[in-house]
Image (cartoon, rainbow, N blue to C red):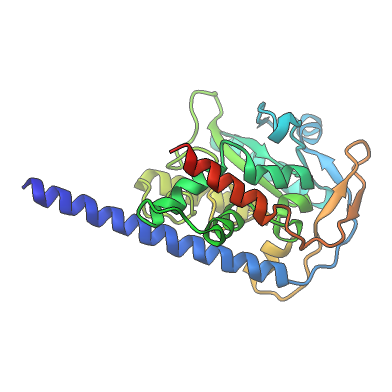
Length: 286
């Protein structure tokens, strides 16, 4: 009986590992397709979501945590998306929920160091090692996994386009977070939206939240259960329209909301030298 239990656990571990590898390979291919998708940046400004929610009287919460390197979070979204954002948040209020925006617009600095921060990189490295049965992963594997989970250039990072938000959902009375099977920024086989490794209730909550967001035009990134976007290359690619994205990577003036298109947006934000050094550091700490 003990052997049967060990075999079952080994089989489940293999299933989880195979699923993770398949999903992360798919996410990397998705990123390559998004990078190739045409973009016709419209120059639309960004708007502060906390200010918009206060003005509309809609209950929305925003993460109180600092961003990478102690930077303040920039809860901004393109002006043309704010009405839909507020409508989605208001629908959640009617449902007895409150949207908590975990992240919004990211500068290039934020996007770069998001991949390198100590809460994220060790998890990605650990999962890459897990894929290989504990062996040291080659740099290219870690680079591809980072690219799948944290966009490695502005062209594929829709947070840099001001068209994406990461969200959690809370009970309106503040009593608890709505169960989605894992917390925000989970890095595991539970991360993809359609993961079979979460409970039936969590899967149902994910589906209900996604349907609510979709009713206001927001499309989910299939490989993260918290990420929603609209009007960018993710959206157009997933819709299969072939139409150029309206929103591309931009630099933001937070004081005015004005944007300027980022040049050379496909240049990697993180060098192979940086990633390799962190791999070696992580392996030494074992």
